[in-house]
Image (cartoon, rainbow, N blue to C red; front, side, top):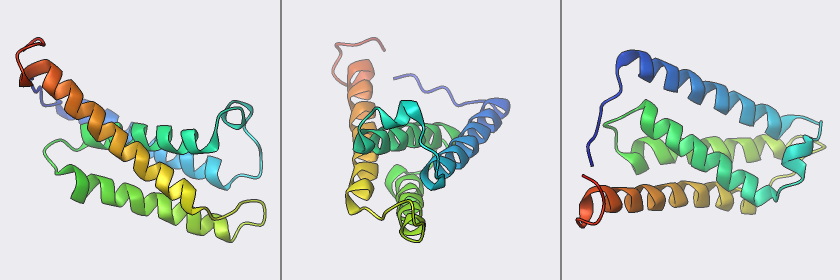
Length: 128
């Protein structure tokens, strides 16, 4: 697969998007208000989708870094931190299943990226 390294303005944009997404997720995780769209979808699916998006943004915003050690672990720590914070909020609750869903989102992201890589340049069936 042809890797195009993002230019500096693209990296800045991606990092701003990542920061905004982290802030939005923290707000949604700690607010007392119910969000109608988010409430209609499975909570665990919301967690997995959020961490899939965070993984994509982090991977694109920091190219060249190893995924599991420098990207996934900090994202998992962020998810665990949110759960710990929710433990102290009377209108929220701590959930190990939420943390597992966060991790599942990261794993699904890596699987999808591996499939995309294989499809694009791994076995000769996809475009190069």
